[in-house]
Length: 71
View 1: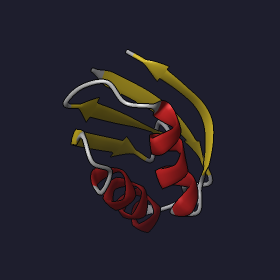
View 2 (view 1 turned 90 degrees about the vertical axis):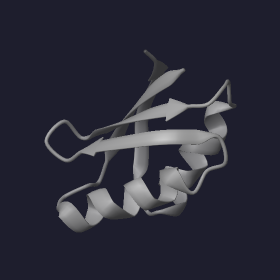
View 3 (view 1 turned 180 degrees about the vertical axis):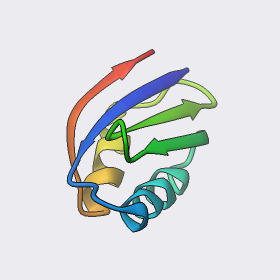
View 4 (view 1 turned 90 degrees about the horizontal axis):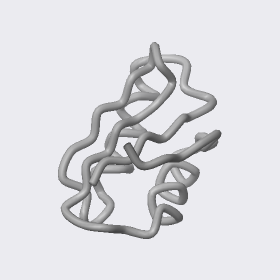
């Protein structure tokens, strides 16, 4: 399963690393690709997951989730 997360507040490479680290720390995440240019993250999961967990990880890292959808 893949989820696309639109993220607000990222302005630099350090922001990308913080979001990537936060999402990779979530149990069940297999791969994370964060794009500063697109202001989003593509997250691959081992199985299904409550999207609230991913949202909380991004918010705990200091950024806002604008939209989240399965792709």
